[in-house]
Amino acid sequence: MTGQEYLDHLIERYPQLEVVRGAIVQVYETVRDAYASGHKLLVAGNGGSAADAEHIVGELMKSFVKSRPVPEETAARMKMMDAECGNRLAECLEGALPAIALTGQLGLSTAFLNDVDGSLIYAQQVFGYGQEGDVFLGISTSGDAKNVYLACVAAKAKGMKVVGLTGRDGGKLARIADAAIIVPERETYKIQELHLPIYHALCLMLEEHFF
Image (cartoon, rainbow, N blue to C red; front, side, top):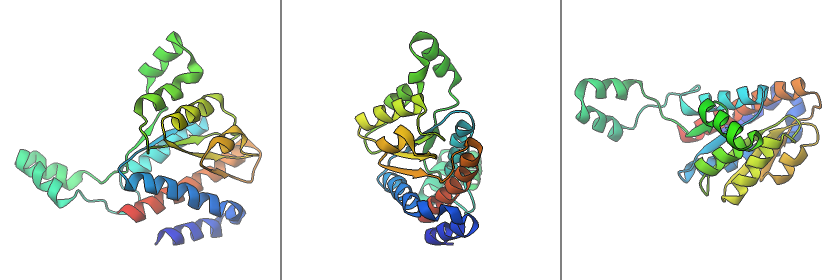
């Protein structure tokens, strides 16, 4: 399937998402352009949205539905380094779209929580990892998660693009983002139920483009 077909198929299954078709394209193009220029994606959220951040990274950093073989030139270098190990690496490693979930770094997070301010943990990670041209994806069902918003401010200050996945009226996240998908629901669980098929479609579209 093409990227457009993946998007069409998403909206066939979830017709209520027709209202955010344009926003999905905007978020896709923002992340696609960052990857095309050699940059990366940082992702963060809280609770269920933290799990979504990890899920997104899992789909981007390894094969999703398509084969992503190691480039022949890289495979050859691996085999030159060590014939046995190189063959194994060349056969098993998969092409990756570089993405980091900011949700699982327990040592850093607890140190910053204890020493500075827990609401700034994501902002600190964005400040440390982010480079101009990277993208920060903030996930917040209300759009008003303080730690996610602070990370957005840090990202914009570093010259990064900010994209959002949210609901209700989009909150502060939608207002600061370069592109935001505001799903047409108000209850947290219903918002999250729509976030998953949307980010699956985005990951499928990115994989189709690059692999």
